[in-house]
Length: 397
Image (cartoon, rainbow, N blue to C red; front, side, top):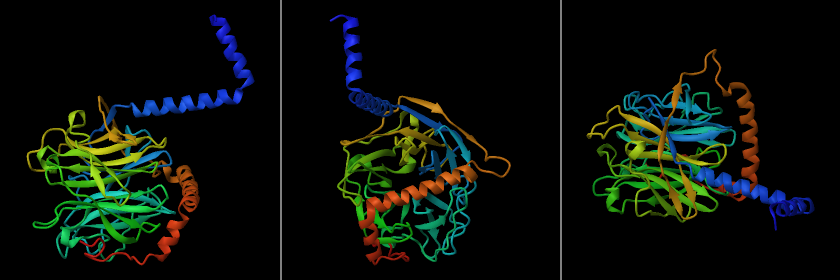
């Protein structure tokens, strides 16, 4: 058959079977889009930002990054971006720490969870009575307004495990909310541990019992795990975490496969990211999706190897992440430079008006989706007897 005959045959088939042609085109487009996003190997370096354990959240086509810069330890910083390259500084995320927190102890890793009609900022601070790091929770109806913390005690504080830090909220396929975190351990105890526990649908009450996700078991982990970030995708549960001490330049980003959102998790035999173009000793990685549901990691690296003390040479890097049924992978072949801009002028932030209307509609959509997917979870929440945990009781230990 000649070229004209083949072309004519295809045209004739398209006329007789237009529906089939449309389906083929759609499937091919989805495949090419997925292949293109999965093949991305370019990371983004955001200069001038030093978040040892950044956390990222995408809402209404805008990605927000929250973290604590060691140069300003009393402030939780918030950045926003539409493309993950150009970032705008936002007002301080937290209005003020609660009375139980040590006012001079500084703040630590933080993360924002989106719940029905509001947001919850989980963050680390020092409980002044015991001098250990604990997790607190603050709320806000909008991301451009400061979070308010009215708590009388820590939200999570495992006194027997040396405290609690690295909070990371996530949602499973059924719309049920969870909080993951880490504990540093104590001499003679269980050692560093990654945990997860169910949250009530508003994110303000822990329910059930805490579950162990992972403890160090491999030589390259150097008896140290931290910064858990859970991925629930198409019935598969994956864990991203940091391993090895932070200040020796040997920290790595690792992954694990989990039997469910509460674990247990089995670590991959090798680290996922050990350095290279993202910097020395990468860690504090947090997984997030953009508005097109492509997966990324926001993480911390060093411009030069640290020498055992925290130096102002940290870097904030956004890295494409491949999520597959058999696990997670990262491949960075090039690095592009991002930038940070000051806040919008004239007293107005990008989402104050139009974006807020989108956000309200987005909250409403998510409320219906969660109701459709998680009616059973809501009924279970109502029956749960868990309460806002007091000191040393939120997660056992």
